[in-house]
Image (tube, rainbow, N blue to C red; front, side, top):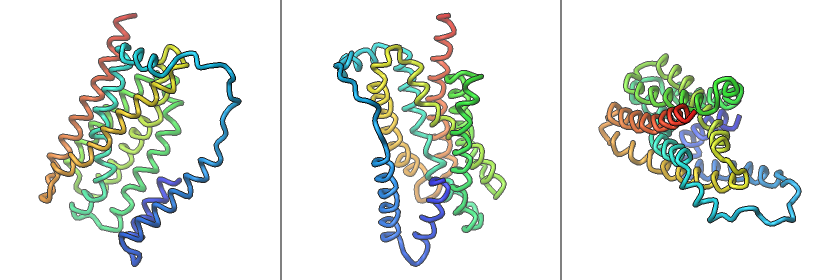
Amino acid sequence: MGAVIHPIMLNHLLNGTVGFVRGVRASAGFVSALLLIACLSMRTRALSTSKPTISYSTAVRKCFRDVFFILIIAGATIFQIGYYFPIFYLQLDSIKHGIDVHFSFYSLVIMNAACVIGRCTAGMIAVYTGVLNFTIVSTVACSAIIMSMIALSDVVSVVMLGLVYGYFSGAYVALMVPLVTMFTPDLSELGARFGICFAFTAFSGLLGGPISGALLSSQYRWWLASLFSGLISFVGSSMLVVTRLMIYRRR
């Protein structure tokens, strides 16, 4: 619900009488308050009195000797360079193609609503398809949809792109933790593997937006930014496909 409500609130703050500076401050305060409530509400399980069975340095060394884990990290890291392009630029793309400004404000709401559905249903589908298989489907679908932003031209295309991309991007996010868990033979390493994986993907997420913005430029070359983001995401998803093929051959 936060992902649906927050863009509406932020758009009204930034484009209303409040203005950009105070709008960003209000948004930051709102998010910080909710995160504080979430942090105070969390409780840990009963603490173990025994020492950890494996040190962090040992876990890291084992991670980088695991070919499957390396491929998963590399694939997710490269994929997320292009992953955020629709999230950052769909609204602007819609406006620059002459679509009503008020409707364009709700393009992110449409995407985030579909994302909620994707996150909620991904686990149920993965039970039947397999976590890695559905992750591959989701990343390939996202890559294709990002490239299809080249053809964005009217309200229908914005709605369809927002719905489909929102669903599969939400499914991808929901499946990342189970995917890392699936390739963790020793669960005492799980925390270290999560940290390593998300450190790399977070860095690539920071890179993607500025690179896409530079390609877009002040001339709004949507085809170039969309093509780059889609292709780089597809390269990442292809590494997950390689992982799937390697597992199949080993069997």
